[in-house]
Image 1 (cartoon, rainbow, N blue to C red):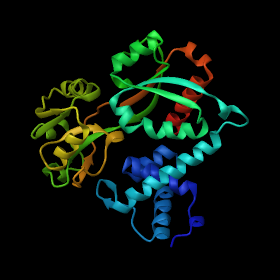
Image 2: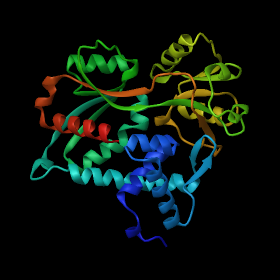
Image 3: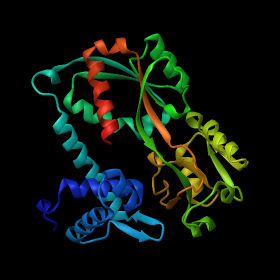
Image 4: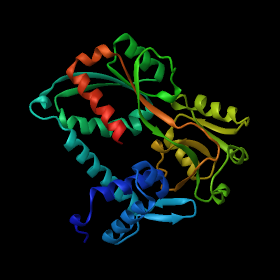
Length: 304
């Protein structure tokens, strides 16, 4: 059995970075260390665990099933450490009140719940009044004062929006395809390569608008075979070989609901990352509960 004392936080952070990027070289860049430091940390973890966390592939690395399970535990540990060092001292945890938060589908499904759970551990008496809204409704609610904070896909937003805003995270977009798809033979894939196959379009959170934008910039029109607002429907169709798509790493999961594997490949075309952002009006930060959640989201976003 592995001895917990054989693991270091540095090793876990390097492992999480490698899992996020699927490349040791990019993980090294993101964590400001050498690639050998990442490689050594992963090797030590695998030796202590007695198994492989990654499959080594020509184009990078891919988490094994054991790697996925260990990543879930690693995230719990790293989040707990971050919360411990940022936990308010003294009586500030006794704050109470309601914070009205508007968030879009993608944010609610893939980003916010675990963060709110972490925040609640420090501030159990702050109540979240959550609203599932589209981006325009969130922006209007924050501007009108009916929402305190808004979380949106800010890469779709008006850059001149007259509200305070901050990018909490950026998530690269990659090609999603079935494990046995012909394009799997490519180390990287271009939009031109993809145009030869049916394209599956996710419509939720202005997905079609943002996708059409970068296809149009490339001067290529995809063959759209199916449009859906359901992430799981799209995941299942991709995994079963009905088409390909381009989506962000934040919403990627390696398995469809029925247990078929999805793969990702980098795009050779330069397309923008998905940006997730926080919007607010300065005057709402006079409320201590709102200020506490705002500060937490800003820290969690920039440290994640």
